[in-house]
Length: 372
Image (cartoon, rainbow, N blue to C red; front, side, top):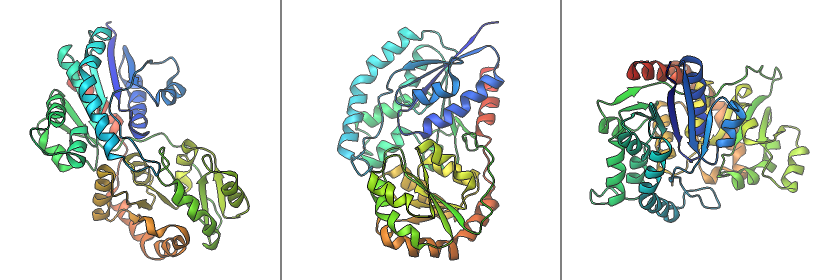
């Protein structure tokens, strides 16, 4: 029996892309016989090795596009635009190198590396894009909508080579309309979570989460001294990136529970009554699937997250917090949320009944599409 060679190209942007593909890889290994999976990515490859060890192969290579952040965690538009210019100048060599290394793959999956579809075209390989946004959509929103912009033209050109687009919930309508005929809708793809029992005490549990780029770090630091004034709420806070002064405040505050590391703070979501976090797609997925009301930071300079938040607010399944509502104002914000919004949001989440079957659905469609 011929071994099926599956290449998975993961964007080097944040943790969400890697977390989704990790779940997909688990489903591939379980459900597709006689296959060999090789992942091509850079920064998050250790996360995959921790999970799969020698069950899959790894190629440490940057996939050329990611957003560049300022010190406060927001997008640096000038440096990010330069990143796209670098992508435009480097992609040809990237494709040539990949063609030499992988001349005969059986399937290419990407989340969401545009030049991977040029590799698919050149090697006559079937290809699938799995994502909730594409980099051409992102580029249009941040930099240019001109038909003559060479970077945008090239991004559009390369995405057209994808055979299928598996789209997740909350995908922009522009993407759905642009690739109509290639679209296959799937539900959310989520990490595995251990079942945890809620605290039986009267206190509510709140997870305050920063993201991998520490976007909310300074705002959380500013807020920590005031959390002791919010009665009947236990706050779980990631202490890994905070100095001794902040850690001392946390250790002396009875309703703050320190958690060490971003991965561990994500795994506390099952015990939460509500979450305060940046509205990244992975965190959105986790809170909606686990049916946790959330207050998301309204990150106005990132068009992807601002789109996500705008959509979710229209659906009534989240609340938002802006920059001015941190610090001492968090007391009023949290108390009002618990009193007014929390139960309404929880009901809406249950009404929508979001599902986490995206990985299983993807496998079924992959097998049908590839005739495996």
